[in-house]
Image (cartoon, rainbow, N blue to C red; front, side):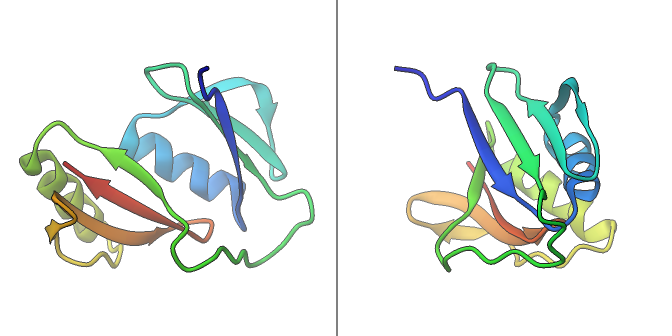
Length: 117
């Protein structure tokens, strides 16, 4: 079995889309691209759907819910952290946690992201 897509309800589809393209290299997929829906694909074929059909200004996920982006090295984690903070995002400092070099932060659109190696 292959997990082929995940839908994230977000408060800002276009903001979340541009963020995920810039920092994690996701690529727009298909013709669905509006304030209500956008599809992104990673280099392994996984599709991440971003939606806001209800025009919500805030999303709420359970406290432990997040999406993760595994990096090849701790140096890559540090590089992404530096790029994010240089661009004004608030992100905790990378640290050793659950056997990984990792950090968490809230992305545009209201969801929690983990970057780890």
